[in-house]
Image (cartoon, rainbow, N blue to C red):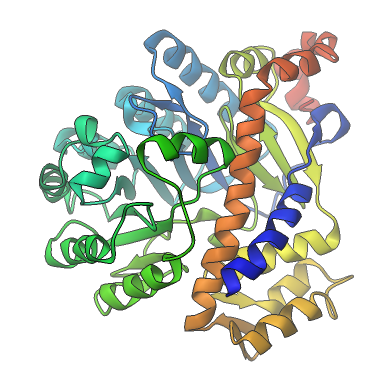
Length: 442
């Protein structure tokens, strides 16, 4: 089967993609004055650390969080000073709404600094207070994405979410209480959990169809990194691929016709904001500890040490500590992957951005997926077929798992990162005004 045959090769490619260099060996490209980028804002604080979560997160402590938000706003100002412009904002975590007043202040800064069209914010069910949601809406939030994961109380208990976030019935009530407050209310769900049955999945689908609680649903396959897999076995069980394809097919069939695919794993009642910002934005800048950026063919990673991140910002830098320039073929493969994840890829537009190697590029990959029935040609475009949608779920799962394993490595080597920073600590004496005038970040 596809998932068993392709996954090992994708893991090999991901290990190559995630080999970053120290930031003093790479340079953040200058902002393209004709481009408006997406701004990704990472808030790493959580009240509960779920065993399956692979994103950069730490337990909330108020003094550390307050210092972090101050640094975060300073980093946002730095990007404004050096010429970046942003159109859309995605705030992820962690739990971005863990300190709503700090979040609102940060969003207000972003809106006064840039001409923002859309803002999407992640949250958890216990933060779905009507007053909080109205404050976020007034701060410019168009879309709230709520981490529900399941409406099965037994699974919620295994994930450690039942006690903190409430039972399925309580979560439904909270969603109903805020539905309509913002333009798009998205519900995040996880499928292929170790003890999840097909009946349990069907009940999740039925809840989403029978209640007015979501404009959009994102059904993610569970994708723990190596560290999370060990922790999950103690409470949730071992993850296998045995039921993944069948569950995905059930999701597509069960959500139709009310919900239509916006990406391979996001389904919308109307096409407003999609869940994966990398689909609609070729380039993005990440601010905050543990954030990633992709600018002009380069990936960058910010520090995973919150204290080191704050020190870097206080010294007039951004939070970036590692970077890697992709080869021309790697850039094309990345565009091919994320573009078709959004169901449709404009191959002619890729040729405009990559004129030199483009005309005959990736012919093996395109031929393979055409013969496999995953994609079909439509003029200058390629489209995912129904079969291809699951194939892209598998590939995106492996791509994100590779990023997740990199996050674990960064968290495990925070001490080594401090040693790395010492090697160029003398550079930190320059002031932010000097750096902004020269466009230098490192």
